[in-house]
Image (cartoon, rainbow, N blue to C red; front, side, top):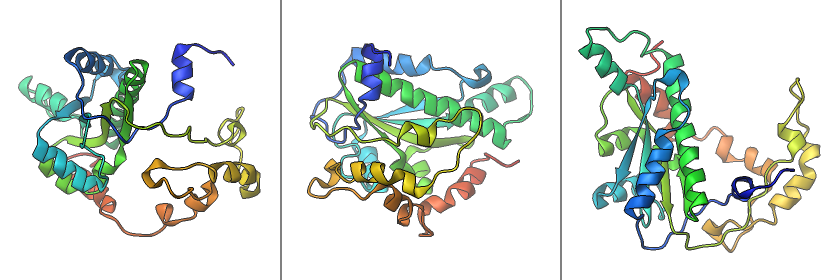
Length: 249
């Protein structure tokens, strides 16, 4: 396997959930946003925006939505937004209708732009010696999040990202074996028994969110309530997207 400083950072990536009480410097902030701005974009439509959340009330509200005490506590908090509103506004100002903007295809292109920008910023942050955590939990209550952020129609906050100086040293979280995710030409079905060794490795990992408890095996997590039938406010996502004018066709 080829090794260099970039690859070393990527294959030893560790999610950080505890940050020192210190914000990014102006140069760090400018650099991270500029890296995100230069991310690859589908059809060059650049369909994302970034909110830098510095208002303490908003940070507290996002923390409550997420249900995670570390969200917005220290470090810098960003919300990455799929943004079709900007291009809709441009079209309207040029005398055009909405065209394909309400198509699910266009929304998914915006999602692709946005998620790539998030990962690009994480890579840049880690290259600078900073820690980061990607926050899918910001959408635990999508309707309330839209209200907190006061976002217009044709936008949707897809992920949060917290960046700062790490104040913890978590273990490296074990990933699925290569032959479970990488195939030559044809997809291969998985057999639970093939993951027995991986399950044993996973059970030795301590999650710092509950440092006194080892986590369940991977297959047990898959068969648990995480992917079960329990209803949550996330089940309103499609309804919220439609209310935002997205994914209508």
